[in-house]
Length: 268
Ligand code: NAD
Image (cartoon, rainbow, N blue to C red; front, side, top):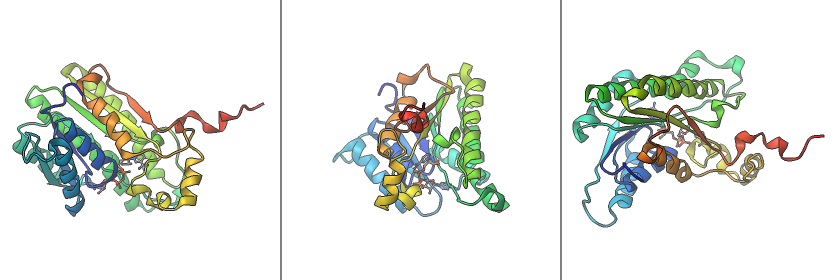
């Protein structure tokens, strides 16, 4: 895709699922990828291996660079350190992918305050702080850049039993729009993708059980869950110059989940 080759990207939560697929896809497009992981590097190492394989094939070095960066996005000091490391190693940071996310299931009237805070700290506060540090860097170098937030269909669909997750993704919509408006005249674009049900480790509770999977998929107009690669393709597009006039938008990638599936049969 146009304008991606040679750019430098940081992907938070790059050890698995959608973040892993994004790192691999961006590397395939010639982007240098900094792959963030929270604690153990094994998943991120797998991401790096596959990313470099896609970027370079069997050639040992093809100019595309990769980097593993440890950091917990719920910790401000880790985020500052992480962005500094990427800038030191790559020379600049052009594309931030706010992908790290967690969820906890609990009736809303019983949620422990610490559990609530943890989800918001990772999904929303972490995304904002990563954006803030990236924006400081871009503005200091007078550079154009792109921020892409990995939101969810629960940005707009309420999700009982997951109140902190729903709030975090609802907040992400406004984070996307506010930053997009504030920095549009500096050439910095901010967008989000909102995946529907996607086959990744976060959804093991139903992806590993054929009956539960069929039940989930019965609510999706296209009749199947999405893949991480389908999410990554949209991220690559939004990061590229082919999306040069798009900012402040959330692109729903959900097989029609947000189309009110119950209206498939006409109501009389
Ligand atoms: P996943 O569990 O595979 O990925 C989440 C990643 O975030 C993991 O690599 C995890 O290590 C990382 N992470 C968690 N806490 C972190 C922290 N404090 N610091 C740094 N990294 C941390 O699941 P996924 O489905 O790939 O989720 C990726 C994003 O996509 C999330 O933001 C999620 O909310 C969103 N999403 C997923 C789906 C889906 O159906 N899978 C749907 C909508 C949105």
